[in-house]
Image (cartoon, rainbow, N blue to C red; front, side, top):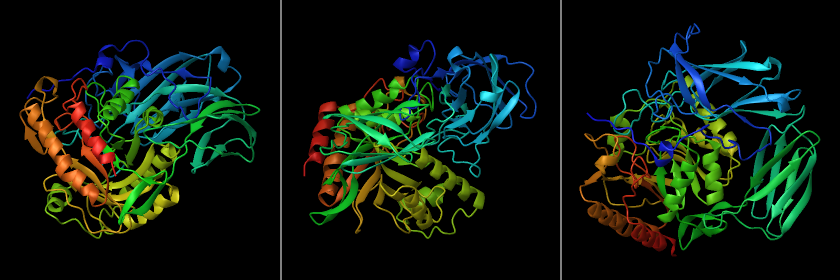
Length: 566
């Protein structure tokens, strides 16, 4: 069986420090030291530091990827060791210094100059240590990583050690930017944003007062922060949408801190329109025309060669007429969501799954029509439930200020699903400003803001429901470009075509005879599977290396125009 690691254009040209961009656009400072690039690397006993670091790994690419320089899957009983020497910049001397990790999968123990800073557990969340007291002029940073890939311990998504079909190569270790910044004694630790159709409130953790300049199309507003909150009222608001993704830039100064951030104004609600419940953006019915985005890359796996690859994908989908990406069972670096914010792409964000998956229970029977199930006694393990809920809370906390995110998905196709009524209520306490899809696909039980359907093998028909209806997965048609495929011997997808023209014709019929007709009967959104091929899956609109778009741009735009028309 032949497997091919395919270079993206940006991957081939990769030179210098990878991912040099400031990694946190929602809270930007001038002080920034990027620790990406070459690190010493070793694999060994979790209880004993290796005697030799005999390899070099390129951070932030996971070791399983080609771009890391390693390209190997390691046994879960072994630990991954990373070591980096660095000199403290002169401008950092005498200030508090923060060490940030974008994400490490799964358990990271971090040491600086032999002093243990702490342990972080979780594969998708950013975390920070204050390292001021452990710093010296010359420093050695050591990170020990364990990744057990347990369905019970932590959300793990589609990673598996036995990859194939819809399951993919696992990702371990550091897979997002590692960086430092210097701050004063009192500094802004985080920002949370709430917005309406003409107002915004920004809440600053760590400070109580300061000054802000808000840049607007009508000129700058000079405002005061009071009790840690900035309130912005706009007489002529410019609302964010994919067609006009306007961002209000904000500069903040306090006695000891200076930062830049941004916000956008938009509203989400459900309205009865022409007899059907519809999802509305900025007060009007809006058809969310999207694709499933798995976030895998042929040469970097979880981590593309450059953040510019996010922009390439977003713009490629916009050129085809799409306005929505369903980020499927993965949480991306913040630069992904920032690109969606500024380029105008709605995100339907999934929570990352854990818990067991069973093919008969979670795929075969629901496809045959057994789609409603009391889930209160499913996946009863309290550890699994607690870890999923914790990860959901962290995901919302980390992403909630991004205007592009309009929709949360809790469970997908019954995988790990439990007590969905309770989890719906919990998510609404975390964020009641977005649509919530409690059970994407099936096992509908309890409350949800939408009726969520997956239809691959049957004609598209809606249910009788008082909720807006969303076709959250459909299609999955396969046309395989063998010279741009990861696995030339096996193909995974739902309907195979040997000729590109036949593939495009079938796709057009699916939209015209299925999606467009369903829209007339109340359909509010449709998410096609999928943006690109992923390993064995060759049902993408683009190849895995993103070098070939399989569909006709003009014909896709005609379909998009028809979906936009009321």
